[in-house]
Length: 289
Image (cartoon, rainbow, N blue to C red; front, side, top):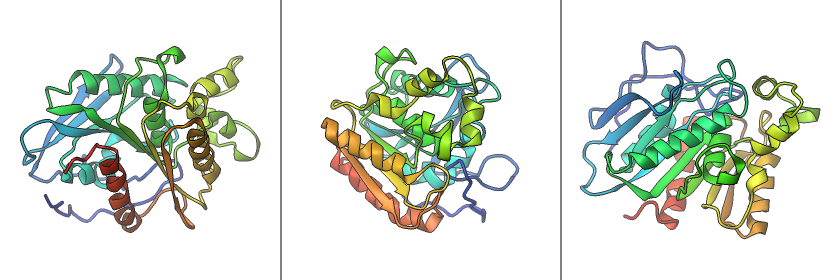
């Protein structure tokens, strides 16, 4: 399948998300080869909805699936912003896409977004057969706060009491926050982090529970991290530290460093990176052809 270029859209990188688009009337128009099931509730909160997108011309049988989680520093962003930079790339490869919305800080503080991401992932697994998704080939991905939430979906054990643990096949993390406490104080403090997790007696405990670094261990899905070494929002060291810790624990982890890359990659850089991402997914049995 070939992605039809949509009406010209200006892509803008943001300081806290993978991509955002300028205001347009409604979500981007999808190609006619994509079937959309929009705003399906996966939990009882108003914001907890997801879109399922299915490539109409995919080969018969079970297909790989991808859970897409938008960025925005847990304080902003929308699932619609992910359609062009992420969802269409996976749809073109024959994936069924679940594009997730979750509660932002204005509706619920930390760790609500993590609980929602886990709930959404559980919904995808429970409804996999309905959309002909192979449960053994489900990936989770996102950028910035979405990368953080994707990592939490892939790494959080049931013992964390944040939701039902799921077993995804792989994680593709674009410059996600790996240590929440690092962004609450000191040189790397960020307003979006202190908004999501403001001062409270158990603040550091919640930060630890909500940090992927807490759950590093051997038996995890393969994790691919893509991070720019000039990122001024989520320090490059977040990606480095996680990858090194995972490898030391005996888990499979890879880091693609984008030289001089900042927070948010332009479309031409994504065009370079996605073949590497799909090679990673093929190597790990997600893409089988």
